[in-house]
Image 1 (cartoon, rainbow, N blue to C red):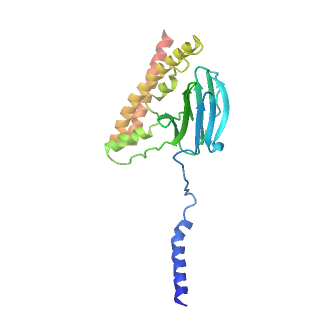
Image 2 (image 1 turned 90 degrees about the horizontal axis):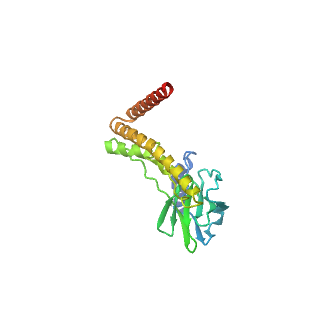
Image 3 (image 1 turned 90 degrees about the vertical axis):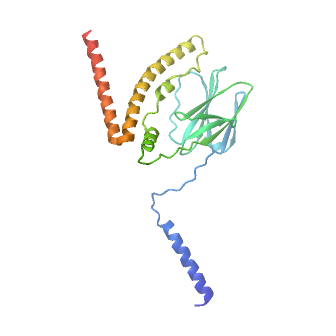
Length: 249
């Protein structure tokens, strides 16, 4: 075999060896590219919405009266709603944006950030102004693994089932306070009362979470579960005591 032929054979053999691990990769392994910025922009101007970029990612839903009470269908985990809210006209202009996997937040005019809560983001708009919206991927910080108390404390709050005071923040809404007087104000009072009640529950749960976080940081998941269990038993005992007082009164 001539030298050039031997060289070619050796090169092919090396390439086959290098390619073998990729060919034998586990089928469950998936490699995908997720863009940090969605290739689409929405521009609101005096009630008109323009779409730039990949038009297939945006679906217009329609104009809905504010406080009409019409529920929006569930978007799943691959899309979210963008709502342009004109308070003076009492109109929501609703669009659905297909984002793919991952969570995104809206960047308005390149500066203000709006988080996507419950698969929707609401942007308040005014006549005579222009709003340009982009969508950037929200990078989640990896959970810090470690055996130290600080690491365990951080891990607890990053993986907890309930974010502190999330119920009261969800209940409070003053966007319709000045709409349809006095109904808008009455609706605001109802939401305020609900936010206060849920805020009390949030506060109680937050205190329990503090003890659970301390137990998790010092003794692990078993101690955390014990704290949750004791708190649940105390809650049931308190509710039972109030129930018995109500029945005997």
